[in-house]
Image (cartoon, rainbow, N blue to C red):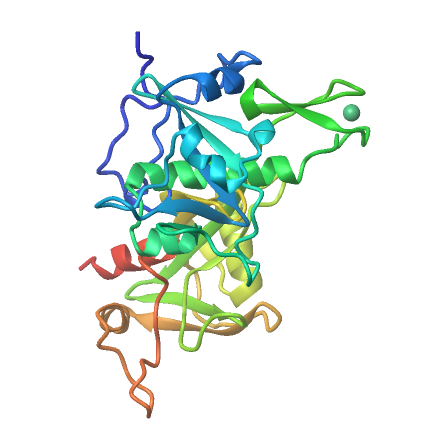
Length: 325
Ligand SMILES: [Zn+2]
């Protein structure tokens, strides 16, 4: 009998479900895994394996559509570390694993044989190289592998920990403390004052790029408190009512972006010089023009302002607000 999906009531029309990296629908089997589940899956016909190395995903361009899910045999030329394989879950009766590859795609002398490429998570999303579901699985697998790679020692006693239940947890070999994979919540918010929204640019942004402000949720905070605190710290703008819009798994390395709208209680900006290169109000008409590529230009014809790529929740927040009457 095939188990049900993790989320049988998945709503493809909801805003979060339409964002990049959100399409994973595997049954994660997290509460129901044997210690041999990875070994069993590696030996089973039909198991799908995704290969990861240096923040990139192995993709084959052999078929009509690029593909990131392989059989165990297909992955063997790429030095898979099967001892570190992680069970992602099951779909349609077949298991899916994430496996780190012992290759270095950032090495200048390194070249994968045709038709394979190792592609970073952003490019996978921007170029729509994988199906929505496989892109979600790639983000999930990458986040899990990143967590395991940086949590090899017990946070309580400092001794080594071991992966258990196919990667659903780690257990300390000395004090038996269990450690579970974590995701870090980040609020990203579009603060609005009537027909204007607040956008900022970090020092590392490309020229002209403005985006929604964002920051990590701190211990003891609600999502709403974090929106108000981060907005005030970065821009000096006080925010009243906060409303949730959508969320997005963000595999850099294991974050959940929580997209919100905030109602501004004032308009005078006092920006955090260390965090922001600029912060300003944009009218809805301005934002619409910039999103449509019809914004003001520099002397060399390049756009004076640009917005985050469509794959990012920041773009969704800004676009959905701009589309309102
Ligand atoms: Zn320990």
